Image 1 (cartoon, rainbow, N blue to C red):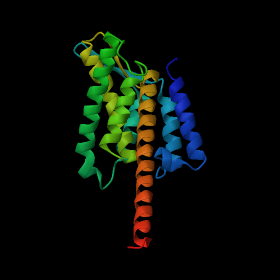
Image 2 (image 1 turned 180 degrees about the horizontal axis):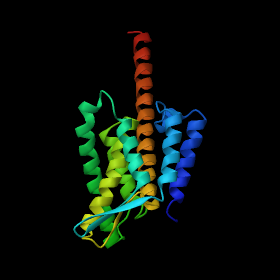
Image 3 (image 1 turned 90 degrees about the vertical axis):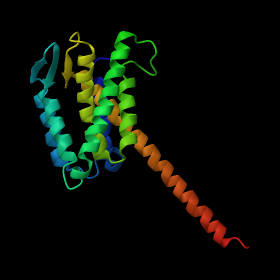
Image 4 (image 1 turned 45 degrees about the vertical axis):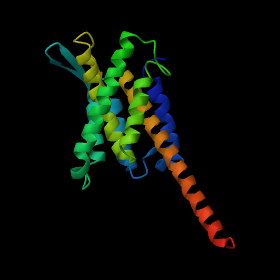
Length: 213
């Protein structure tokens, strides 16, 4: 599959869900739709703009669209709770990014022992870790955005200069949206399971009270 197709597919599904009233399920219930539209349009317009930075033999290519998304991720968690959670979220993003990048490097060296697909496994694992770290959609989004950035940098470092990190290229966007889709599916599955367990607990409690001794 060509880079960018997965991003287009997932984003279209998310937009359909948001437009049909399922914003809460995709984690966009509290998001200002106007701001979301501006950010999306900005990412599309800024995608061709890029800048290369080098640290010794390590080179990373930054797309302006990814920088805008990083700013959006920071604003998503900005507020009173940021002082309590910013270091935790940063640590979660760093840990997820290290694991994500290491898995990418391992598959590049020998793409044999993969689970679903060498291009999908690392983002799926990133989504799983983000779901374990936080149940809030805005925190998950911030963790995944920065972990995708850290993963690309880590991949470039582990490659010893043979690979140029590309933060914001189409393949990077594919990985990010795969991870986001995974984290929302996992979170919703746990939410549904918890709701079922709570309803069952209430049902059994009512039956226990109504049953004769």
